[in-house]
Length: 503
Length: 99
Image (cartoon, rainbow over all chains, first blue to last red; front, top):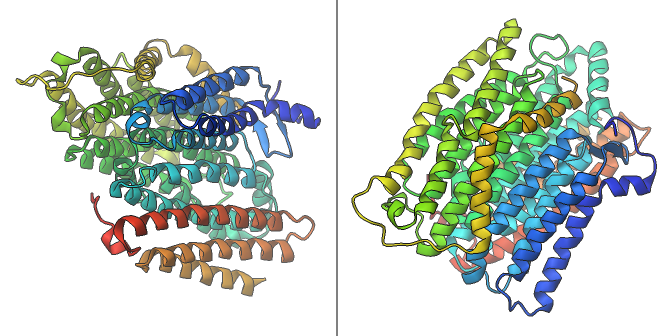
């Protein structure tokens, strides 16, 4: 069904919304069953949540495109693609958290998994909205459970510190976002993103001076979403929160929450405020601003990651750098731009979730997050070492793996944009910085691989895998390889996203 | 309309100032509420004086009030955990992780 067509029938709209409704109810079921079974089983709640996510995925394949409730629920190719990403991220995060639910979170297993599912529901609603109110509600439903999850180890100072830091930053950024949104409402009189674009353009023809207000709201929106995406200079919370939060939660933050921020960014800026590059409509240019932040994040992320000794902090800085690469693709306002961003997210999902799953497994076994303690693992646990190396190499962008294809697509889209527009020449600089910092990034990723493979000592640890984390690692390896070797089906699907945004 | 927008801007700036300078976590929470309420004033003023035909702005403000309440609940719970682990809610002591 064409996504532009409205569904007038309420029942049909609710049917199109079925995956979200099901997942929400399933989260309540998981919490209830965990309480009713007196929290005896170590794995029941986790497996139930994984089954729920699988069922949601199946329901997703039956749900139709279309819009309902105004534009508050707008199921388009972008929603479908990113819902798959969110569900897979939640699946892999839950799969890698069986270690901590066995030892640490003994009394709140159901709540832990239920909150991850609630956050996933928020992300799914966020990706299926073209309207500011539902966008905001989706964003908050994503972040509020994550505040709780970050502070989930109630007796560990590290976890609580990360929780309060994430809470203050998260609430602050959503206040900034809302202030920007309130001015956009004041200028356009609507919260629907597409009619907002038209109204602001029409309003601007009569009142030239509103450019200042648009500029203020643009800055507020970039700052608000930049905090969610951890784009420098709004990135300082990310390493602290990733270090203190439970490792699966950090993984979910770095992929799910980041993808949600990207979707919000794409919707606000590409649908409602798309004009830059020389058109006369707005006298301001969010493109330059975002380009500057992307350059900052590539440089700061990659350079600061080099001197980290804690692997979770290193992965946090690496995810800051990856956000920079993704934003380069977002600046390419052509048919490949949004498609390359979506594809990058797809490849990044498997590589990063896999890497965090490996870190979680190692942390459960040894209690250590230091890079130095990974030495000699290739001899005692070859599968662990091989899969972790594949994830890290994919994050660098080594050719047969998914990361290479993703980076190639993003930079190719950006170069196409730069060569097509006279005023977009500065994007060449961004691509240059991206290529250069990718080379830097090899240093700190390869350092971990060096510790595992080229150390004289054998590791004192031997990894044991429970079925869930084994599944996650295998899915991650297969996903990274598939994204690198057979990208065509995903790219084709991602291409539909650009079409539905009108490029 | 302008006085309302000006009040909202002042409130919002006060909120940002409070979040950045307060050492007490409860103070930070209150400053966050100031910021949310500035947004609400903005929305309601735009609705009342510019776009009077539909109540979109006021509805948005209602949603913000509800979400801000939910956010405050989680925030206060985390502050409670801070108090249990540090025997205080001053942000100066919460500095295990740096850089």
